[in-house]
Length: 170
Image 1 (cartoon, rainbow, N blue to C red):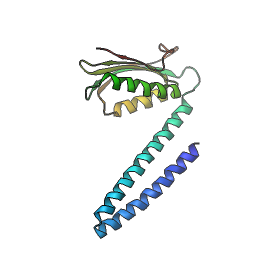
Image 2: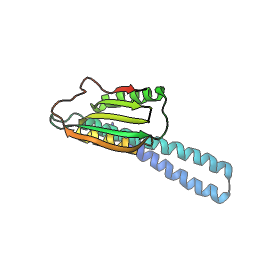
Image 3: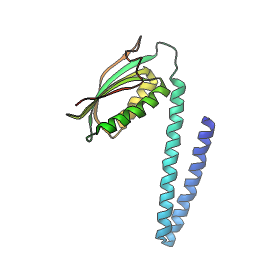
Image 4: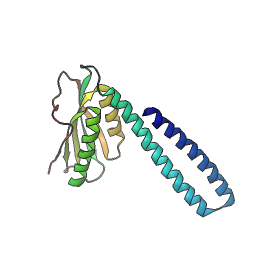
């Protein structure tokens, strides 16, 4: 499957190169309608290519997620919100997180605190997978002031029964 995804990314890259060449021609012709159409096509292809690249990375992480025992860590962090979240949005984050965590064999507890607007989360799993997930969290524009509170090796998971337990505190 990974080979097929890599091939799809390669083909999309070739299509993007052709669209960019067409864009130069449209610029020279000063054809605004064609330029707009090409820009939309380029954006769609770039979005899809990014999606495929994310899928490749997730598949690679999934392969790492079942390591030999003794490679698990626990990472606890806190972050502030960049905006106010509705309870439904926090629930959506929980649903997406649960699905991803199941694939990656991550256990987790997430606490969303509306006032003052903060997340507290504990992540447990393969050290490399947890660290890569945490890098994604740090880069997520919904988070600011991300601070690691604790990172330690685990002999047993504390949240083994939870793929992702979400709490939305009032």
